[in-house]
Image (tube, rainbow, N blue to C red; front, side, top):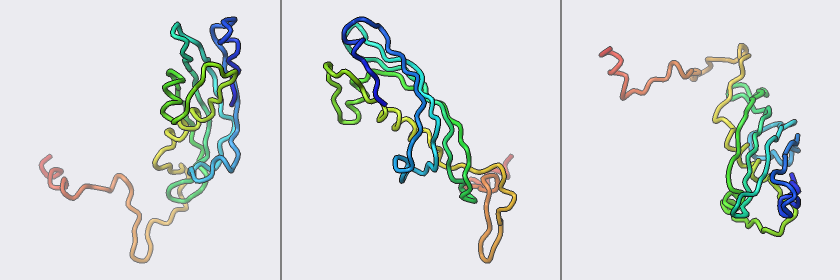
Length: 158
């Protein structure tokens, strides 16, 4: 997702608006656990401060499709996150340099890293009525039933 910053460099503009909708291909989502991510909205701006550093302030919002932890059925998971910071420092975290003579900046790696941090550990579908809860030698234990054995005696004190 390239953003043209030539107007910032020349001083004609103080802010470059970012208002994009991006859809990820299946090859980009490979090995992430995300099954689908279409219509990611990226809104905000990139500005230049008095020290000639680029500052990013964008908000991401969208719906990622993840597999249910119990049934593996697709589950829509809405997310929203904000990215704020100095672009030089953010790119340095990725091991890349942001040169001052660049005409465009690719902010997709920054966006992608923030999306990966939004993936929950476990997603459970609201419609899990057809889940088998017992079988030969096994039983599904819900989070409400899980009790730490070392703390179970504390329950008797209350």
